[in-house]
Amino acid sequence: MSENVYQIAIDGPSGSGKSTLAKGAATKLGIMYLDTGAMYRTCGLCALKSGIGTKDTDAVKKMLDSMDLKIKFADGVQHMILNGEDVTGSIRTPEVSRAASDISSLPIVRTAMVDMQRKIAADQSFVVDGRDIGSVVLPNAKYKFFLTASAEARAQRRFLELQEKGTPQALEDVLKDIIWRDKQDSERAASPLVKVDDAIEIDTSNIGIEETLDLLLSYIKE
Ligand code: DC
Image 1 (tube, rainbow, N blue to C red):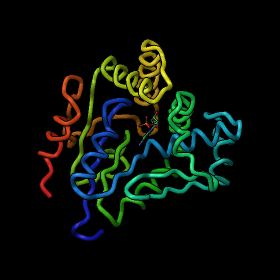
Image 2: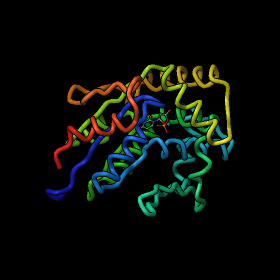
Image 3: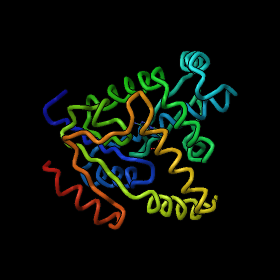
């Protein structure tokens, strides 16, 4: 890795504001942004399309062997290409969210994705967000952040987002989904969501996105 290349790891639970902040930080710093959740979402979508169980290790292994997963960056926007098809717009449904959470608990899936993530972030400066970036993917990242927010605050944000997108869901269902995903993502055996000791923790429950971005950037000396 060349001297000027550096990485920023941002971890945290769903709805903590990771992707908005990671995108904002990457734009401000003029570096790339990698959304690793989109990779697990694409694996989840692939399993749903193939009609296989998202926790069936043997079937998922076969799926991984034949799956053609590519990431393309166009004008800084990450596109997920699954078997030649751009599926970027199809991976944000509640069904895919659950499939992604299930499939991401399988070690074979994690090994394959982590390997891709490390290769992508090796030669250029990147902001990378996910659950295990500071702990497993990029333990030597120059900057590590861990975002938190109460489940209620996260559900409220997600509820508004879904409304804006024209795919509304009841707030209580959104909250239930968040609590279910938190539990599964933090209790799984393989690379659970954890805050590493050298990560800076930011609680975003009561601060706006602009303020959080300023706070995060204040730690970065580039
Ligand atoms: O961040 P997200 O909601 O798009 O992530 C989708 C799922 O993928 C989530 O349930 C947790 C999982 N994930 C993971 O296990 N490790 C990552 N580095 C990123 C996401």
